[in-house]
Length: 447
Image (cartoon, rainbow, N blue to C red; front, side):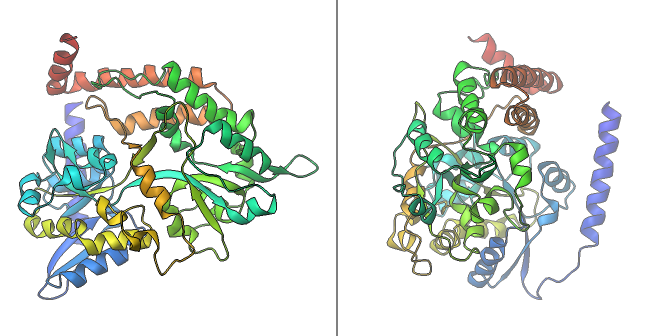
């Protein structure tokens, strides 16, 4: 097994070097090149252009083709990695730090007068802070709320919702706005939602993914089961949300943000659970009259907080130059641009407490920006266990949750299966990694 891994690693390194060698050399003459591995959201182009304008000595470029944690690690260890790369959660951050490619910028940011722990939204701290040290800076911060079509509410004489409100109160509204034809076929749903929002519900019902020390998965707790069962009930009991079969019947549109966002833009649903970043797509629809309100809550008024961060490759010969990009993300120009683009919320909190954020002159009809900012104060970041691969956990959960969504499994059966498989993954992980096993045994033995 050892030799298979080494051979695979060698092949990946070779392919990475080849890919790097054949890249076109179009760097502007006299400028210092910087490469940022991030997604190909059209908003990145304006963010890059602003950096290059503010720092004309640099030529920052986007590389959307080399995203993926394993690829970034392999290329960086081989000396052909990017200068800057994105990080989406605490597991990825831990992997980047343990592999030795994430540069510790704690002292550099302090020298620049940046107090990360107090200045940025706590919901994105796990993406940049590992064991008390800072390894990057958030690119944005997000929380989900309820979008709604004002004209649909007006058409059916339903008052606009106001928060805070409960899911029971929500259901009364959603049922009024779920419309079916004379044959029972859905014409309009009360709610549209992606099922990756499961953690949003688990939090509100008081559930957790792991024990606080991360040694065991407890997604099969009664609280978590009740939360996911409610999600299933939205489809099959209350019938305010589409089933997979009904989703397949809805025509989708291509481009960035396809799926639930475009169904909502096409008014297939009166309400939708989503982030402010949906505006990156919704602004392209003509004539929408949008409103937003805090998400309904369960027993607890909390919401899942999430976002992206950018880290610097410790092996990059231009890492000190790349630090300018992190400082740029901490500055006024970048934060105001993020808020203007609606690429979620600016990472630095204070820039969302301005008149410019609340009432952007370019979008005077958007009177709901305070909703997202205020909800961030109730946002809770994703849980991370150092003892298991977060991507493996997500694959297990996605498979089981798909079965719940399709009605093939109850929440109880699915989450019990998920917990068992995730706990098996934890044991496999610590058996492969002596350092992790020692840490795990120390925690368990101290109980």
